[in-house]
Image (tube, rainbow, N blue to C red; front, top):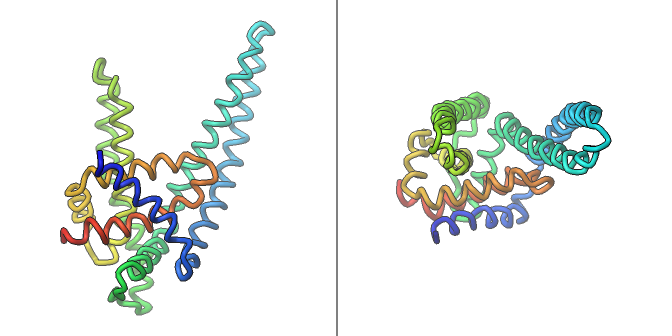
Length: 244
């Protein structure tokens, strides 16, 4: 339990450290992108949810009209949560090179060591497709496990534990998602990222769990990505790097 709490703490440490001078500038681009994508998705879902609400209430008789007071908040809540989840996923994919840069600056700030990196024009140009490739590797790692959990969710008896399986899977993937940025800066493979997180599984799941939880909280999820990148970098520096 203490390892889970320690992992959760890294997210809040990350939230605090991104307000430091010298780091705030690296938060702006992911933040602006997140807000823009969130507004586009929220607008589209608003239109969809409005249509669902109108269709539902139009079919209710006067006897059941009280249900609108229950259904309406649920519809808007689901729409808000979906907007947050989808916007974070899209922004993570589109702005992945910026997260590596933020992770680099956080690590330098924490350790006082300057990371040796090739900043040539060719390497900078290659960083974008390489970042996208890493994102595709994460998706490829997630899909088989998600399908396995989906199958378990359909089996009577076992499906009672399905919500727990989905929570653990989400926490694990969030951990891999963000720890990958500081480890990628050291040219470590995605397989090494998985191995490092597995070596500190409880701490990693604690970190990923709080990130997954915050991703569904409106407004707070707008600063989730830079805070999670910074928190994952602290997790790397203090817990995972000594293992390499």
